[in-house]
Image (cartoon, rainbow, N blue to C red; front, side, top):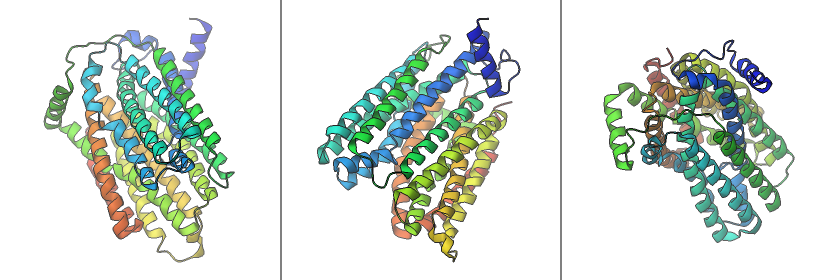
Length: 438
């Protein structure tokens, strides 16, 4: 074995705690032999993707970009729904196309390259965009970015299932989440030193680094050694929809999983409202926002590998425990504002609760990603992932609008109480799921 392969194998065994990298479940021997190098290539690809995602965040960086170019305020409100739903809604329509591909990594590469091009367009808009026209162009580019993200997402999980064995996938995603947490931490530290929003040039630099991240993602994806798979059974978009609806009727575990996943949206929807409470109670300077981001980065960096390792043993229990943790965090956040004391006027209690919810949300993401990949067989994995993501994207638009209306009418505290109830219901639903790692 060449020295570089020996070092890759040792690093892989250290990251996974696997003393024998040649022992594999549910992937062929040819994929098992190259699993260590594929593991590391997918980890580096994930680093590029997570770095780019953080530096083009629709919750943080893109609103600054809109403000810097003078876009109307109502456009800022469209950023997060477009970013999230645009990546999820169309996935079932491309599942049939992906199943026609013997090597799905090239779909992943295409998505990475499109995101690279979109980030470069955002660089140009940061430098030269102005007013409503510039804001409209940012939204158009964001649509393309989100669609490409969805294309990569479904292909990534399919390649993961073909190249990484069971009880190693959660570990890979856990280390990926830890890297993302480190990137978020660095972004927060930088933000603390800003008294005002960054200049147009600084935003252009951020978008340029994001473009490099997605370029790295595409390059590493292209170098993954993927054994060509079966291409039978690929359908057009409407056939994929019909087959997906049939799966929901026939596969009770898949239906219950999607119900749990829908209820677990509460963890994602609660995060901005805890940040909003911190802003309302302690002020709105960027130093406090930077503190929230630092706490978020630390929480994600430390929690994700632990959740990932646990997901390889039982992703069902990870979803259950993360749901319970999210319910507790939301309940405490809802009550925090009513507790007397000067400490509630500082950002620290809200930063602590925010960090705890980030830990819970990391478990939600890792648990449900690992569960759906391990639940589906190799021939149906792309369709399972695509259908689940499309349903979630639809619910994100629907529930996101409803949550915003409830917050407007009743306030953040009442809304967080309702989200706590949803998270508790998610935990109970996940408890009834069958084990898929055994």
